[in-house]
Length: 147
Image 1 (tube, rainbow, N blue to C red):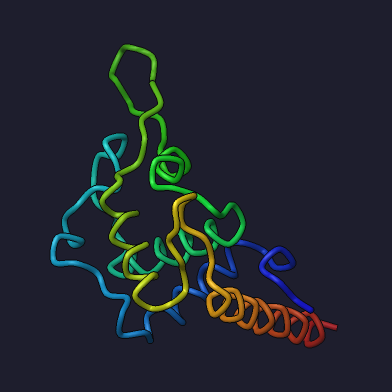
Image 2 (image 1 turned 120 degrees about the horizontal axis):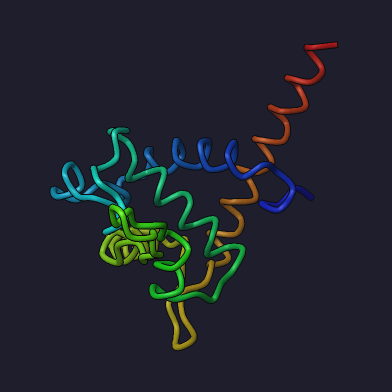
């Protein structure tokens, strides 16, 4: 049985973002067009569909690391802040983006929230494994056509 662990993350997240875009519960808030993803960034994302990509990456991260909280995910999505002539320093990513995307994933029934943090729901695990299966079959067919 194919799981999220068996497929490359980049291809999986791109495919999952396309699937999440079809769900009515997952939609970017009004402020998503001009917000930065953290204090370490200089500009907002250039991709107009970045919200779906981030939600897909968050959902994959909950599947792999769950149960997980917002603060730990902020550390994962952080980066080095350019401080001019001073050495760069690590800064956490924005928490509101993670919180809102996790709330949307909860309303879609893909994530559960309990006292230990957020974890993948059985419906979410089934959904992610199905996407992983389609990614793996598309990769196998692409390899077969190259021969």
